[in-house]
Image (cartoon, rainbow, N blue to C red; front, side, top):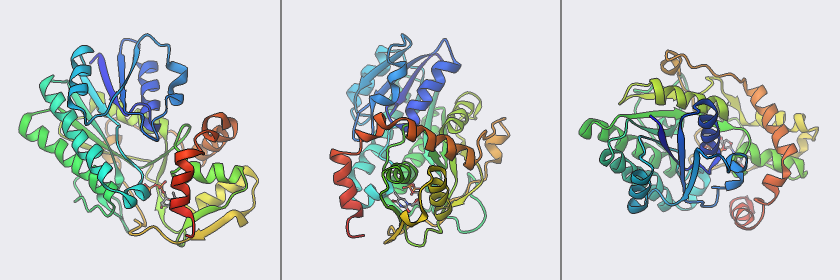
Length: 335
Ligand code: TYD
């Protein structure tokens, strides 16, 4: 494995993963294929732009010709797919682009993996494919009972990956990660949204009773987990990837306000998300058996994340205009 294609590398987790690979593997060459849609942002990669081992190509994973050209030209021998539509609330407004990018796009990449006989195709998936887990924790063998169009699209992609492993022997691995937090996360996701709103003394729109739970992991821990599976995971296998600790949304909101020295009166309960999954919970024994461990507690991850948004207004202030504000008013006005 020397020439790695990272798709969706201008997004939040993908950009961290590219930086991580360049740091950990001095001999690797990385190609980043990203369509640069609303949340893809080259500002996320500014610090590595000039690295001779890094190449950016603008393109869509649904564009078979483009994918084929990149695979051939750069002699790609491993592919890691981060490219996806990822926001549940947007999938409730419009599901078509999720099916297109997440399912059809994955199929295009799998076909490319097949043609170029890559050493590894790694699919970055999500704990949301299991559906809500009111008690206990999900095992990799649990059924996929998705409840949002976003989750259904990601589950479709997981199943397509499995089908390509079985039918065509493509060496596919899948990680199903819990929620990520850290620098460069687009502020539609709850934690950067709450942090940046709180900095500006704007309300924190908490859905429903705020007693839904998520496992929030620090993005660099997630990148290390993907690396472990990419290099040491078994083809055909799925690996859950999270901290195994869940936090109530209301507690997360209070912690953010406390870290920023802002009053709890900024929390505003708003109408709940339809079909809101109350809890996800992962059993991560399988990836731990490969030697991976989460390095950050939620408190440590949140503290670092809050500090980054405080220090990097240059990054998020320009995002919070135009398309973002349009989405924001559609999503939250009158809620
Ligand atoms: P989100 O960041 O959208 O991730 P997920 O894919 O897990 O839904 O939301 C995380 C949790 O925060 C989820 O329970 C929904 C809740 N939430 C709010 O309460 N208010 C908000 O404005 C958003 C975006 C999410």
